[in-house]
Image (tube, rainbow, N blue to C red):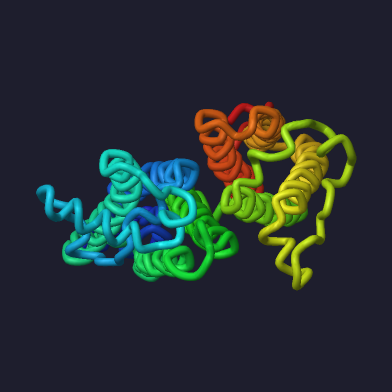
Length: 381
C-alpha cells in the first residue's frame, strides 16, 4: 500500500514531474544564422556604397563610355597586349564622344578613362559574386531564417536588373549626336542603386535585433513619426534623382554664384529647348535650379521632422533624429560649396558621400520610429 498523503500535497505530484516552462517559443522556429547573414549583408552594403562613389567619379571623369560593349562574363578581363588595346581604342573612336569632344586623344589618355569604367563594372561583378556565393552557401546549409529567403533573393534580382539598367544607360551615348549618356537613364541607374542600398540598410537593422525583440518593440511604434519620416525619405530620394540629372549634363559646373544664379533668382533661358519637357532633363540652368529648390525643401521639411522626432519619449529615437538634422545641414553646406567651386572631383565626391550617409541616417531614424529600443523608466537605453 502507498503511504499516507499530506492534505497539502498537490494531486498527481507523486509520480509525474511538472514539465519545465519553455520560454522564447516565438523564436522556436528556424532562426537561421542571423548574425552571419548580417555580416554578409554589411559587406555587400559597403561594396554598394563604394560602387556608388566610383560610379560618380566615372561620370565626373567622362569615363563611362570608354567601354563600348557589354560582356557580363568575358568583359571581366581587360585588354591583354597592345593589339587588344588598339582594338578597344578604335571602338571608342567610332562613338560621338570621341569624334565631337575627345578627337586626338592619345592611347594613354584613353587607358586612363578605360580603367575607371572597367573598375566600376568589375566592382559590380564582384558584388554579384559575393551575393551569389553567400546566398547559395546559406541556402544549402539551411541557415536562412524563416521569411528571409525572398528578401535575400530580391536583393540579388535587383542587382542583376541594375546591371542591365547600366548597359541601357551606356548605350544611350554610343550613337547619335549625344556626347554623354542620357541624363534620365543615369537618374534611373543611380535611383535603383539607392533603392538596393536602402533595402540592405533596412535588412541589416532588422537582423541586428532578435525577432522577439522586434515584435515587442512594434507595440511601442510611433506611427505618425514613422509616416512623416517616410515622407522625408521620399523627398530625399527625389533630390538624389535630381542630383543624378545635374551630374548627367554637368549642370553643377555652371552658375557658380549662390544664392543667385547668373545674378538672378531664376537662371536665364530656362525653357530654350524644344519640346519644352526636354528642359527638365537637359537644360543646365533649370536642372540645377530644381536641385537647389528641392534641396531647400528637404532642409525645411527635415527640420519639421526633427522637431517631431525630438518629441519622442525614446532616447535613442531622439538621438537618431538629431543625427539626421546634423547630416542634413552638412549636406546643404557641401552642396553650396560644390556649386560655388564648379563641382571639382573632391567636393562632388564628398557631396555624393553625404547623400549616402544622409540616406542611411533617415532610414535608421525611420527604423527607430517603427521599432523603438527598450529603455528604463528613467530613459536609459
